[in-house]
Amino acid sequence: MDICTFIDSLNCLTDLHLHLDGSVSVASARRLAEIENVSLPDDDDELKDLLMVSEDCADLNEYLERFSLPVSLMQSEESLKTAAEDLCNTLSDKGLMYAEIRFAPQKHCGKGLTQKEVVKAVLEGIKASGFDAGLILCCMRDGADNRAENLETVRLSSEFKNNGVCACDLAGAEALFPNENYIYVFEEAKRLGVRLTVHSGEALGADSVRIALENGADRIGHGVRSEEEEAVVGLLREMDIPLEICPTSNINTCVVKSISELPVKKFMEQGIRVTVNTDNMSVSSTDIKNELKKTVKAFGFGVPELKTLLVNSVTASFANDTLKEKCLKKIEDEFKRSVF
Ligand SMILES: [Zn+2]
Image (cartoon, rainbow, N blue to C red; front, top):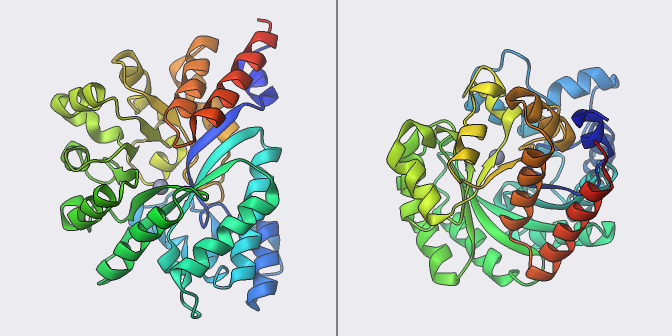
């Protein structure tokens, strides 16, 4: 069996960096449009084009524009619940045993819902699916004067901490609105004991990662540009902060031209806990098996490196210890059964 066939056969996969609004399938978009009474193109290919980036996507800012349609389709409790349930069912079908799904509640209050109602609806959808998923609530950096909304998001992350929400995130256009403008998010998360992952070192360089680390980030979303500064790589290793690397997304946003340019192998050899994730299944037109296959091919990885990546995803997750143990055992079982 070659390694790609082996990856296809696995059911012990984890995705730690997965946006709900960037992972709406064509079928799900149609269901949501009916609920929201929004008209969509009849042709599936045309609809798919609205949900995904083109090959020549210019940068992160253009990439982020692809979120406007899916966000508009999730403005009621019913559509939010449906979107979350649909995504969890898809993940289960694609061989995942656990995922951390993230989204920004404040983007779903356009028709009068409160952030709390939005969060509750998404949690209901996850619960209805029966799939093991933790929810990460994103604060946004997007130019709006949304300090109060971001603080409410951190507060809700704390309120639902033991009821489905596992962490808080800072997402949006990193280059336009850098981490140093959002220190209050870091401080509030620390004050409330909320775990925090931060999009950093994607559109901006190593300094952005350093600021996130110095202010208490527990994980880094992307972080690939940490390699630009040896001291930041050293900090990641010393603090044992995992990276959520999303290969195809980094190509879409022109961080690198090919996956082999990403510091995946280099960071693993340096003892940094690297995980591989999708970021956005519909916007980047991908899934976790595709990301893993592209990664092992780009770096010539065999079974040991693949296993390390999968184990890293479990140990780096915000899941409780019981669930982590269950997931680690599943990886052991599936790798034992494999004969090469
Ligand atoms: Zn992301």
